[in-house]
Every structure is written in structure tokens, then in C-alpha cells.
Image (cartoon, rainbow, N blue to C red; front, side, top):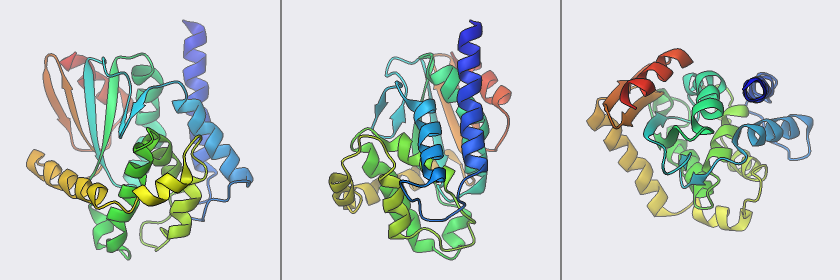
Length: 231
């Protein structure tokens, strides 16, 4: 319907505006204008869509998209800002697709903070322990800084957690240091390698009619065509 198209367009534009006017690697301050804008945009995109762990979308969705990504990767941010926002607003919200987020470290592992990759990814997975991973993931991209700088600090990760709606911060603080979550990040790396993925974002699209791989950043139409080909 026209009303549905308008809602989708508003959600996507809100995310685009929030990200384009984000703080670029500065520590999120819960009561700042940038933080309120980012939190509202993310809530508008995700609110009402089922989440379980690091997966968003109905468990009955016929197509599963597994996304291998890095929270510090600028191409992943571009994917999140554009095509993925459309996928979530149109396909995931409609119950046709669910997306599972998994970790793959590429350039940032050779950057100024190689040790922080597991920490940042585990922070998102810790939010997933409360079915809030996608809020954390989206907020990270909202505040993403230059990947060649050391902006990912404990204060930065804490600031993001404090913006996630209905997140038990004390539980998150404990969970994010779990060896189990660090092991999951390592397992994701091995899974990506087994699939032949070496860059981010890389997508594995599975449905009743088969599997497709897209190992590059492209446009929504390309992802949508791949999804339809396996439905």
C-alpha cells in the first residue's frame, strides 16, 4: 500500500540522516542531540521486528541472509546505511527474510587496534544475549569513526550500550567479557573462510530454491534479486 511505502521511506531516510550527521567515532553521550537522533532512527527501523540472539526477523521467514561483517568497516557502514536498511524495512519487516549477523575481520585486523576486533564484536553479541544485538550493531555504525584511528574504547562501547532500549546494562557488562562470545567470533572467522569470503560485507543467502553468495557491496536491487531467486 501507499501508506506502507511511505513508512518504509521515512524509516530509511531517518537512518540516512542520523548516520550522515553522526558523531564519527566520538563516545556516545546518552543525552546529546546526536545520541537521541541516532537512537530514534534505529528504533524506528527495528521496533516491532522479532530478534533472537544475533538474528533479526521472523523464524518462519523462508529466506535467511547471513551477513559477515566488521563493525569498524566503512563498507559495512555503507551497506547498513543503504541496502540493508531497505532489506530490513521491506523484506525483514514483511516476514520474507531474516538476517543473521556474523563477524569477519579484514582491514581493521591490520589497523591501529587489531586487538579490539573480538572485543567490539563480542559487545554486540552480548546485547544479543538480551535479543538486542541489532540495536547495538546499528548504533555502532551510526557512531562509526575512521577505521585507521583508535576510537573504539571501553567508554565508546559502554556509551552505545546505554543507548540500546530496554537493555540490562549490568548484565551486558558481564556478558561482553564471556569467553564463549569471544569463541563465537573466532568460529565466525573460520566459517567465513570456509565459504571463501575474505572481504566485508559478504552475504550468504539461503532459501528453498538454493543458495547465493554476494561477496561485495552492491545495491538493494541486486540483493533483492538474489533473495527472489532462492525463495
